[in-house]
Image 1 (cartoon, rainbow, N blue to C red):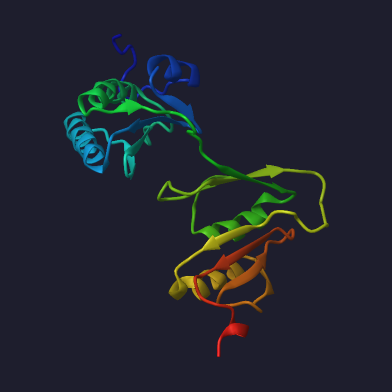
Image 2: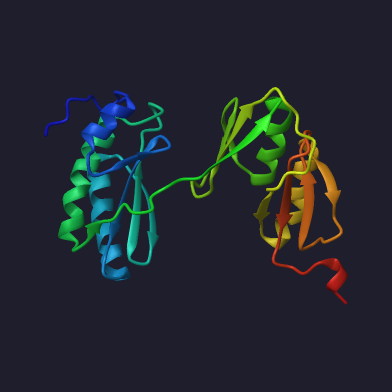
Length: 224
């Protein structure tokens, strides 16, 4: 099927799904997972995809996990899926078979953390500092490396003062932990306790939502 879309034309979700039937639309990007017999085959596939991407001057995000390769496509300049993605997606699909692989979309998903907030502007900087994420909108943060979940802030009229049953742990390198904690405090966060540092610090945003900055180290109480 020929591509009716221009290289910088932004597709609707319905158009993207129809134009790229072997791929799946998840959280604003088109995804494809290919499975191979071993790591060597995975690398061969990635090298072939890399050559295609260079020829077409459009590059997918690629994640290799032994015998599985996860590809994601979008066009940053249009803020979504474009005609360039359609062309590259169509070129990649046959390469899966040439590389002795098969498309395997079972379990494909992306995680987004949703936080209820009465004042999004007051707490978003806290979570941006905790994660080291980029702000892409008034109500969303994303991982610049595109490996972690995005964080979306949902407006709410009610404040819930009871303790949350879920909190978030963010593991960081030990030599960066204190700097990360300080960034959180500078962003309006509150230190709940450092009793267990340097294993973890418990922090809270302006509305009491908690996150722990964690390292591999043992709690201070257990250190001699």
